[in-house]
Length: 138
Ligand SMILES: [Zn+2]
Ligand SMILES: [Zn+2]
Image (cartoon, rainbow, N blue to C red; front, side):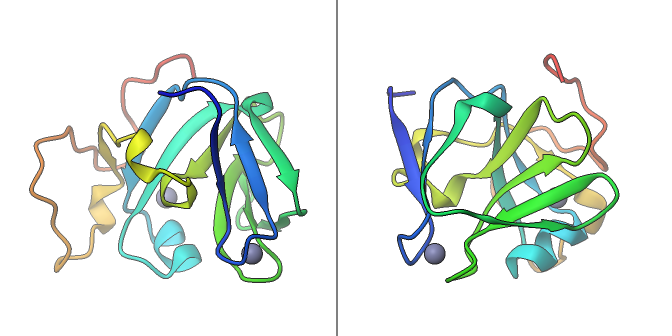
């Protein structure tokens, strides 16, 4: 990964930087991500919480479950981040909101139990039925 990876929302109000290597990157097929993004699958990267630095704007936080907050631009609605509600150590960032989404590629699929039948990717990445997977320091 290059140094100084940056991203932001559609309208440009929220801009952020990533200051560490991601610890994971995955496609999530869970129903909550599908609804929250209005998309069949979401590509996330996972970072230590303090490596996600908001430079401009103030993302709105929505508590989407007992476990998580989802953060999005309050002006244009772009979903940007998801973090645990209690004692978060990590934050997930939507890879497609990076200025260069090709900088980081997902290495697995999770929650394939809710994969939408008409959506298929022609890759050979590991597929996990839920979020159970070998976790690197999570
Ligand atoms: Zn925006
Ligand atoms: Zn999900």
